[in-house]
Image (tube, rainbow over the protein chains, first blue to last red):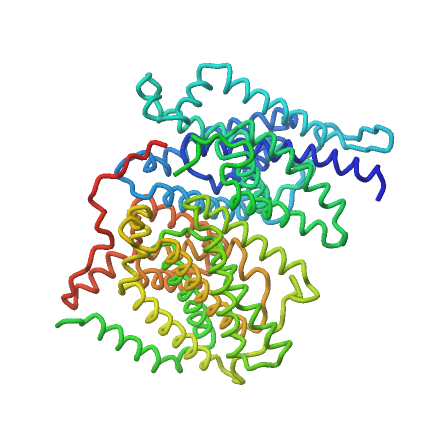
Length: 301
Length: 325
C-alpha cells in the first residue's frame, strides 16, 4: 500500500464525511424537535437528488441553482408531509408516540422508495458535473465534483450553525428542543417549529442528494445506505447534538475509507465497509448510548 | 352459543384442508407463502404489538434460520427436519442474545439497533459467498420428495397452526399479562414485580425462534436461499402486513399477512403500483385506524360466540404521563 493511495482515501473520506454530516444533521434536528427518528430521511435525500436532476434536464438550470431549487421543493414538500402525517405526535390523545413516529416514517420510506421506482425508473441516472475535470496536488487526484460537494456541504453546515446559534429563529428551535413547555411559556409557537425543523432537515438532505448525484449516480434505493450511515453518525455524535453530528460525520467518513484501505482482503473490503459502520453503531448504542459528544438532556426517555 | 367463533374457525380450517387439493399450483403456492408470512407476522406482533419491542431484524432471523438449516443439511447430511430444528435453536439463542444486549434500549434506539444487526447479517451473508453462495443463492434440499406442492401446503398449515396455538397460549397466560404490562409501562411493570429483563429476553428468543422456523420452512420449500429473504424490503413488507391487519393481536396480524399477500397477487395487473399502494394504505391505517383494519372485524367475529372481549390495555383511559423530556 502506498502513501498516495492512503491520501486519496483520506481525501475521499473527508468529502463523504461532509455529505454524511449534512444528512445526519437533518436527522438530529428532526429528532431534537419532533422527538422521532425519521426513517424516511434517506428517501428525502433520494428525492432531492432526483429533483435537482430534473430541474437541470428540463429547465436547463445550472447544477448549483438546481440544488437550491431542490432544497426549496423538499422544504415545502416535507412541511406538507409533516402536516398530513405527523400531527398526531403532538396530541396528548395519541398513545405510544415513539411507535407512531417509527411506523409512519418507516411506511413513508417504503412508499417513497417504491414510488420512485415507478416515477424515475429503476436504472441509475447521472446529472452533469458541477465543474468537469480534476485537481492535482502531487500524486493526489481529486475530481472537481468532490471538491464542490465538500465545499458547498461545509458552507451549508456553517450556515446552519450560524442560524442555530446567532439568529432568533435558531435560538427558538434550540429552546423547543430543550423544553417544549418552557418554550411555549416564553411565547414560542412550538407547532410551527415542528414543521420548520422537519422542512430544514429535508432541505439539507435534498442538498446532500443533489451534491452527490454527479459523483455517484441516482437510483431509487440510493437513500438506504446513507440513511443507516446517518443513524451511525447521529448515535456516535449523540442524538440531538448538531456539532456532535458534524464531527462524527467526518470521523465516520474518514474511518470507513481508511478501513477499506487497510482491510486485508480487497475483494471484500468494500462490502464490509458498511458492516463496519453499523458495527460501530451497535457498539456505541450498547456502551455509550448518549454518544461520544451527547448532551444528556436531549436523550429520549 | 358460547365459543361459536372457535367452531367457525375450526370448520373453516377443515374446509381449507379438504379443498386444498383442488387449488391449482399457483394459488397453492400463494397460500403457502401467505402462511409463511403469517408465522412471521404473528411472531413479530408478539414482539412489537404485545411487548412493544419494535424490532427490525425479524426477517433477518428468518434468513438466519433458513441458512442455518440449509447449510447444516448440506454439510452434515442430517434430515431436513433436524436442520430446521437447529435453525430454530440458533435463532432462539441469537434472538435471546440480541434481546439481552438491547435490554436498556427502547423505541427508536431499539429499532436502529436491530436495523443495524439486520444489515450486518445481510452484508455478511452476501459477502461470504464461498460459504453461503452469496447473491447467486444457496440451493437447499427439499423438505418432501413430492411432485406437487400439496404436502408443503399441509406442512405450512400445521406449522402456522402450531405456532399460533403456542403463541396464543403464551399471550393468554400469566406471562402474556407480564409481556403486555412491559409494553404499557416498563417501570411500573418492574415495580409490580415483573422480571422485566427476563421477559424481554424471553420474548425476543421466542419470537426469533418462530421467525427461524418460518425461515427454515421457506428455505426447504423454495429450494433456494438468497440474502434478500432477510433484507429491509422484506422487513418493510412484514411491517405493512402486520400493521394493516392489526399488530396488537395475533389473529389480526396473521389476517393482515393473508390479505396483503393475496391482494398482492390479485392486483398483479397494477404491476409496480401495488407496492406504493400498500405504503399509502399503511400510512392511512396509522393515521386513522391505528388498531389495524381487521381488528374491528375480528372483534365482531369474536362477539359472535358471546365471549366478552378483554380490553388490550387497562391503562388506555388513564391520562398520559408527562412527556416533557
